[in-house]
Image (tube, rainbow, N blue to C red; front, side, top):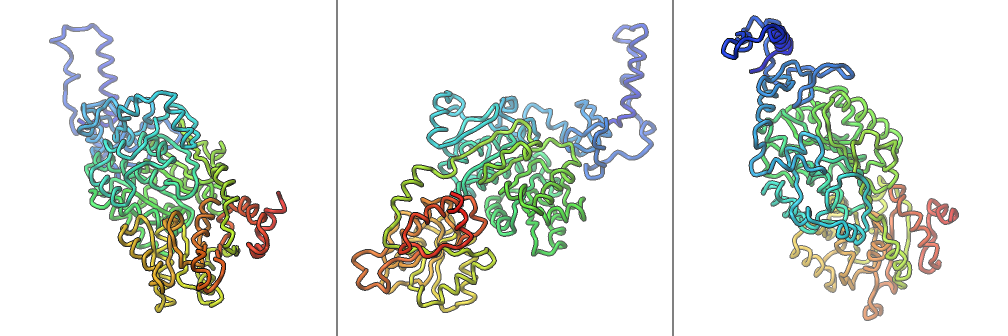
Length: 582
């Protein structure tokens, strides 16, 4: 039975008055305890059927809060004596008190010390497998040392070794999608702790180099928790959204949502919305009206829609908030203002206990000023650049590769690349163009084909192409004459692959470390057996850099300063001040 708060208190008060008088025998207790409530007791307004019909609780007041959605708890669930806002939340609250919330998942996982006190964490019920739970402290320290991981916090879950150690909290459809994307297997160093920590619902601050698996870490956990919440709400479309993922650029948001959409294929009631510039606001609002569970967007567009269409975006329903490239979002002027507006104004309208996660490649994000909204956070720091590997890279630079470094802003990269490829001084097929992501490779390939339809262009991306497809492209590059003019690749081609006919390498996106940079430009080494027949006697590596590569620029400038003018052409003025500051 659902009882209005005022009526419930009235009857409780009457019961207290009766109990203070003479106590009758049990068989003759006052009938007031068992008298059904009539419609006359609730003539003010009809009982609200849905959570969406209830108003938000007033922040800072003593108003009761719904235990399910954190709106104004106008009623009391007579089955549990909990505050609820509507019949919808009453049904959910009643189901939550049953012995089993989700079949085949033990309830004792909820009381594990590493599980957060959030609704979605309790529903997902992450528990450590026996081999993890029995891990000794000495074994833990050995693993952290071997993976170069530093961790701070309390009640930290043990690190996983492979993704299948989390399979008991993931659906079979989701596992199949992860496997098809090449993401189901051995966990990367950052994933070893970030995945179990987020599955346990904990607030996390993760610092790890680029291309280390951060995106998979938070997407896996977000999808798992959203599935649990969707099951609780009986797969209702408009029960969400449950999660918000913020990223600083449109391209990064497109990349995240593209991966996310492939991961949720075939999962019931799992829809995404992309809120970025360049797409009409009306289309995005229509998408939100149809019902979504996960939102990916830039702070500017999310803030705009939150201000203009708050009841379509409904940020107060968010259970999870993830900031990718958090250092940029919280430090760069403009983005910082918009991000803080979302976190401090729009999200603060709800008293819902949510999970917050910051992912970054910069350790600056661990400053206390950025983390004041966290509850018992876990800080995970993965070694940025292996110093021994970097020192070894400085000594193993290929001697017969000429290096040219150009300062090129992102908006001008495609134009500059075309000018180089059109110049006979540089162009010698096949040319390898390195990019940082598979999505970037596909976009660049399409862009070049629009301008040069006569070029033979291929893209080689490990997660996007099968082994046979990649082998066919590499075999075509090694033919004489080559089957391809330009091959756009991620670091898939950077290590351990012989490309004897390649004499020009272009780093369209800078490598994530000096060691990776050395591996890339080594693809331009011309074998001694081909020098006599090659158009040029030395390989050539051209690298585009800009302020987005600031983390690596100091060590990169120092590296270039150790080379002679024969090996390195004059470096840009923007890099010289890094050398002067040494």
